Length: 398
Image (tube, rainbow, N blue to C red):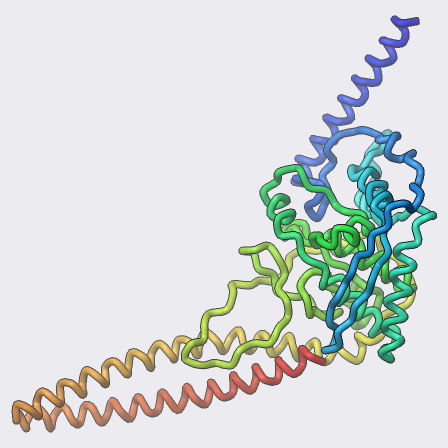
């Protein structure tokens, strides 16, 4: 009996080892590093039966989490009743993808779907969605504006910079959070916040999806919208869940230095102290997972024109700013040359060197005219730039 039992154990261990080796090969082949990167890494073959069978706990350790944020200039606040025992329950749930047999083609869809499933005894997401909807109705918001309110709520949750850095450093210590864990910790990275946003929007009846950018280590979401106005022609409009102020349908700039998208904010007008903007870029190739159908975000049809104008203004600003900065540099150089010429004229005047003085005066006056023309050209262009900035700052508030 013991021999047979040991033989079975040996076969199981060999099988597990072979599958684990295959998983590592697949992970290496796909260039996937870690579970918390946009495309999750498969670390090892195991089924955490104990975690899967943990019963949902009795609500015995209540905790109130307070949230405060701003949407369209109005301040909102919400108290969410959570429980430490439920937090521990979700923390113990599987964070790695497990399967038997061949690796399913849709394993990534299944992986993300695992985090979007809540226990049937847990009404946190339905209650949160209802609370947000009630807040919206109280402020006379329509359905799509309530979807915007949901996005602003998720964006306002603190971004976990330390966790993000650990992911970039490939420490192997970080895992994605179930939405309940994020709400309890009140801190998370793009993947954590995107899963929460999708869960709430689906509860409100919207179709939603997950947008992953593997090369940029970034995740965002898509909310179902009219095909003609959708992002990438996908049938979903991009929605950023990290940087505050980014609106549905607008893909934010990406800062490779910090590996984060940037918050949309007012830009300063040009003056002598104008500093160079960040070296920003656009997000790269996207893969879309967890597509569901439901209510469409139709507000995008009315706001698409604004979004396109904002995008055009950003491009204009990005072209004009370096040109103006170069003109600033040239004018500063001309001012120095004028000052040198003026000092030289003073030297000739004091020395009563009339011939050289008269010769220098003509050169000085000609240079003055060039300088005046350059300053006028700069001021005209700077005025146009500042008008562009002003228009941009008006639009981002709408």
